[in-house]
Length: 296
Image (cartoon, rainbow, N blue to C red; front, side, top):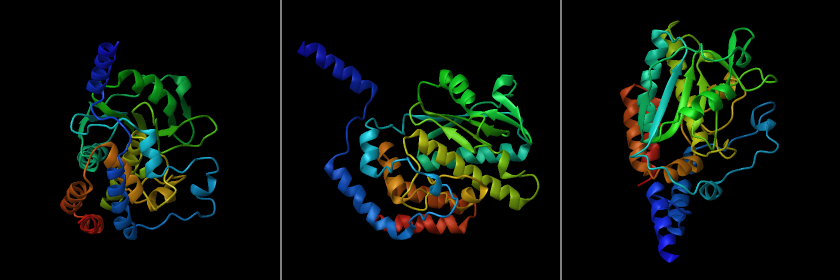
């Protein structure tokens, strides 16, 4: 019996190479980093009619709770973020998606693979509706399309579309939706503006795409909406909320990602500083430089 149990444990550990709750040493190190980074971040404030004012039942998820809820770590060096574009994107949108691949690879320290763009003709009529424009139902894309097709080495499998999205008939729209338990997500560029209009619209569309994609992947990796700081993992009820939401994760949510993906914060901040410098965004460059300096 002992041999059988030992064999089972060996096979289990081979499938999940990093397993277990956070150690006291790890917890202390992360909490110290959070204290150092906190002065660079603003506490989130409840505003009238904003996303946070609508939350009545969502539990807060501090770092230690996250670690207990997500015992199995993800080996970022052996896992892949897969992206499936669905629809008819113009060349400017395709350019943004290509740049998004690069950004996600830096942000999560993980390989990103984009599949060939496909038509949305496969989506049945019952999972479409006509409002101002045609909308696609997120739940069909998540559970009927993506879930059966998840690649074996996927840390996340995401569909991107240029059409608007809705989760159920009672909702007007959503920017995106993800599953915290199934590695799948979907988001839309529809409400970000047409990037071929001007360079200003292009830059804004790209920034909103960055925010939305990292937010949804944050959900896939187990992070709930952040109620602690002004953070990328805050919720968004409309474009105004999304525009105010930063690109970066707060100290608590960054700790969650760093612990679960087994990534060191300083090297990640250095890579993000270089990335934003390369695409000529001085505000984000300076922010990550300041974050990096707080980790010394």
